[in-house]
Image (tube, rainbow, N blue to C red):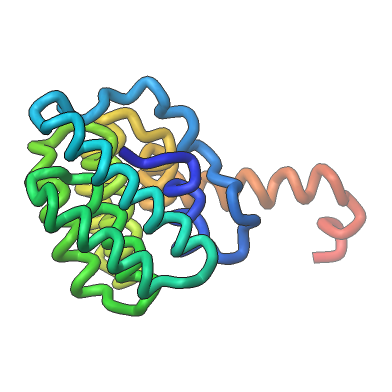
Length: 188
């Protein structure tokens, strides 16, 4: 299960110009259904969660190699759980291993069977990678699925991917600029 720190790390990866911890919209999905964790032995699940927290802490402190080790150990102990794959994908992305990150995101989505927080976050993360690769249709599909799972961030990304919305936003921005600065508009 991802923590607020996990979401902050994801935000930092894909939007390095925003302050760490400032994750607009990702806090709005707190009522998102959790993974079906009851299928896992409680003591093993606790150990895996602890490894993931250690991995997130390592990534936050800049030790991505240690983070990858913790996430990989969590996957080795509980390979059927989606969350560690999602977290490791973030660390792989930090290391520049986009192909490895995509493999882990695909695994997380498959293991989560289309529902839960880890699947939603994996879809958002994969959608962002697709956007960076100019694969807009793939990004749109991932954001649509994540939006259906409750991600407000994914809904905003869908608006940004909509060319009509972008055109309307541009026209509205120009109109508001003219209203705010009528002298500048008259000199055109």
